[in-house]
Image 1: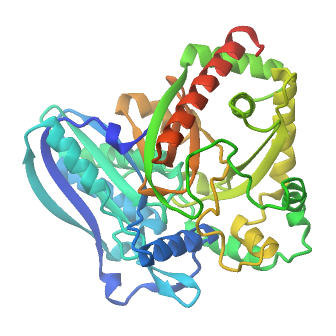
Image 2 (image 1 turned 180 degrees about the horizontal axis):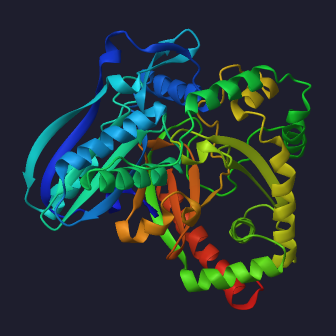
Length: 463
């Protein structure tokens, strides 16, 4: 799976069909009382506040894959309905509540799909433009929160979908692709899908909220954050250290780009070097990124916040939802340190972080700052690093054959965000950042330095 800007989506001409979720439960038969997660509460507040400021903010995570040959349209629709019924987060209805976002869950048997036959789109440019517009059809505050469609041809069909970020995280995309493709193959052969158990996200969210409510200002779960803040000039957030040409307090239109960093063969060599130094590939990439920031003028200590999965290895491994917490890391990248030393420091920082994954980030923010409504929008450009190995996600063995793609889209930003991801073809970087001339220059120069750093390590094990 490759994470791309939706603008880079390839789409051949075909016959377009759309599906949206409809439910009897929307008339008032929903199951009330479920708690949204901290991330959902914060995301809903961001959308509400930006909308009030006349900023038409939108953020979704989507995906696409190919079905070869002539498609069985009935089987495809059944597979999409199976997806929505299987994952309760896709059956959620969100509304404004006393504590921000309130959620009700539509029972599986009440979910239906409404189909719109758009018709033939005769050019690749027209098909691509149509799908891009269609995927932008989610709405955090009012719904729909998921849209699904297909571009049908005689020789193949492209299936695509988008979920508002309120519903899903990065791993949810390969989960959805695997579920739809597996269910389609089963229904096309006249049998029921056979998929692993998928845990309920709302149970996970409720447990997180109860755990957060039980966390007080003197809890040991806050110790890691407190130590980090003390070394970060009293700030909870680590600043991105390079110039992005931003004005304080301004939200900008976002730019989205994906860069190839290492081919599969060169990445294997890089992994071998990292393991010889006692680190994992992800640790080596983090170390190389910190070194590259230093070479571009950053400080001699790299600080960042990292999204950390809270899925575990149980049923939630196969669930759709937003199973992510956020934690800080810091390690030395000073001139004169070799790659082995920086990697060792990065690994130590990651190991020090992990025991504190049980402290929900939004609750930490409330306890360690004077605000009581979560971080909402970042106060300045924040240093952010994410790494995901798509080869270890559900359905990875079929990603290349299915031409699986993931799309992270946000309309606005007030910083720069880096999603490193590994797949069967190598290491890639998807970046979303503010649309300023300086940010474009800064990002391009940083990626160039990073590519050289990674390549040097892969070839020689040295900087």
